[in-house]
Image (cartoon, rainbow, N blue to C red; front, side):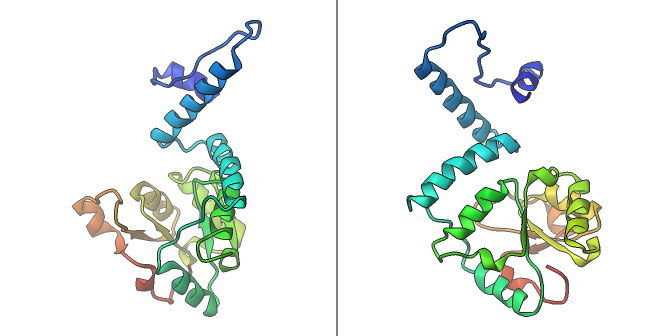
Length: 201
């Protein structure tokens, strides 16, 4: 259990163990759950359970039109072009598959789900583990070297590279600054339009 692991590691998480025999105040319990969820998001925990909870919340917000998915301006034209050339496009995100489908299904540009051939989340493995990328390659029926993986996280880039994938690091406004070593090691792009069509996507 994640909460028990946090306590073992002395991580300062706002979680409280309550004996089953003790009657708890519902409002207090709700407050503590909300506090813990906010803490998990603040530390950017890649928890499948947290992502599922976020998915439930997002579903309600997307369905009612309170929120719409945002995509960078270069994304739709680039993916449309790639698909016109017969390339397949998949999403691999720490966000759940459901959350991905909500974001792209209810975007400011309408339903974009037809742009993608499939979705993967952390159920296939953590994004910083090379085995996850091997699993994806096997699942989609490709050799790793036929795939190009786009990410803005260099730890993910390294894991994908270790699995034999081609990698490009996408630099967007607000992203974490790359070190000189990372800039020299990885292919860096600032727009999807910079990708050529010669490799797999």
